[in-house]
Image 1: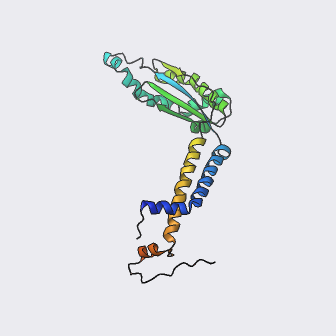
Image 2: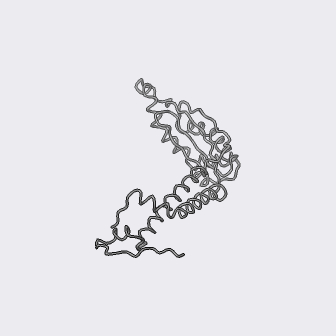
Image 3: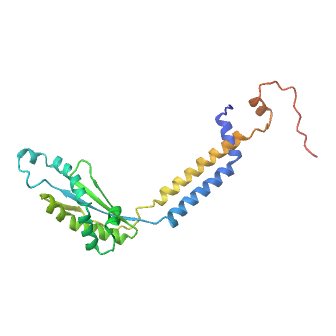
Length: 224
């Protein structure tokens, strides 16, 4: 197997630099075009809720561990807010025409590590829809949790805001990935073409392929 020095690899890449440039332009342009014009833009509105301790937990030990307790029950609250019963209520109150199954795919929830707060994110193709749904959830969620779990308090700490920019696709990131992909694939293709090219291009190339001594060589004669 042939071995190449850094300088030789650099020379090989420069020799067919047009391949690298072409693929880089194609991939960069393709990624930008797809992200900007072909992929559907989605918008995300979020609401943050604060969870306090349960009213029924009155022992001193529990009061000292309100934070730990709140973190434990957040998982339960997330399940409650993902039920058909609650999503049906969100669907009817928002009056946007989304079904329960559609809402379930549009809504994601997560706890904020080390806190008594959890977040609800609503993603839709229209910024107005994501905002209205998040606002509806912010209004209904505390009531639903208190109704079922008898929580001491569930408060909105960060109200939803109308998204001004799409949350996806990330045009800059996708374009950068397209650029790097084109650059790398172009370089790999050039090296592959060089490895598959078995032609002898000179004395040095001959010495790399064969160990037999060179008895002579034909000089290059320029035409007059």
